[in-house]
Image 1 (cartoon, helix red, strand yellow):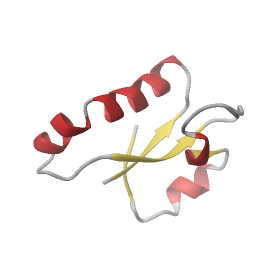
Image 2 (cartoon, one colour):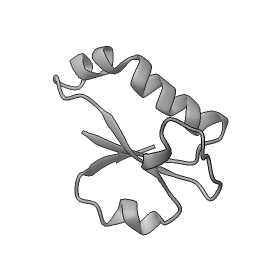
Image 3 (cartoon, helix red, strand yellow):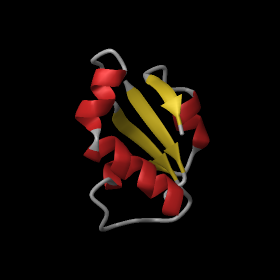
Length: 72
């Protein structure tokens, strides 16, 4: 299941960390389907972040992507 995270400050980066750290537990509780962070919406740049490919500055990327089922 694809997830989009709105913002990458204290809360948003924490959400990404929880999804990645507890992916097995979350998958068990969601019927076996793993969560994957597809987008991180933020106006700032994070050039050295390991999630660099997931960043977008355009909310429409998230809104128009039918794969995204959860927005946090």
